Image (cartoon, rainbow, N blue to C red; front, side, top):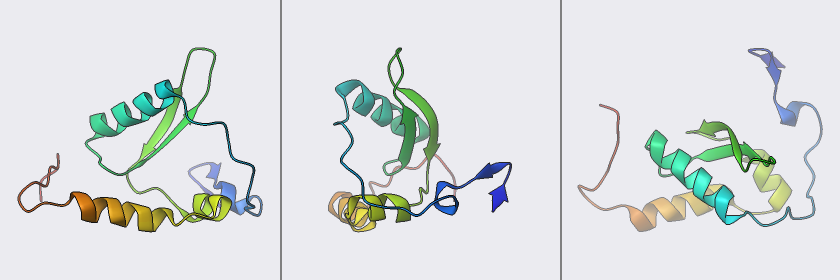
Length: 100
């Protein structure tokens, strides 16, 4: 399936567990957190590439697909997000940039 000229990775090949990637660097973590904050998102997916000039952001997903990463890592990412939200939710403390 092609949408907007691109093909989703999960449509090209089966998703299989893989060897863990090298640990995220402090610069990569700071870049991802900064991108999320600039977008006003507490939970999101930040797609980035490693380059000779440091991390490069490809996109920030406010509603990232989790099937591939959950299958590849064997972790319940959705459950982890729910736990994070539940632990940090406070009456009257919701911060959004949108209206509605």
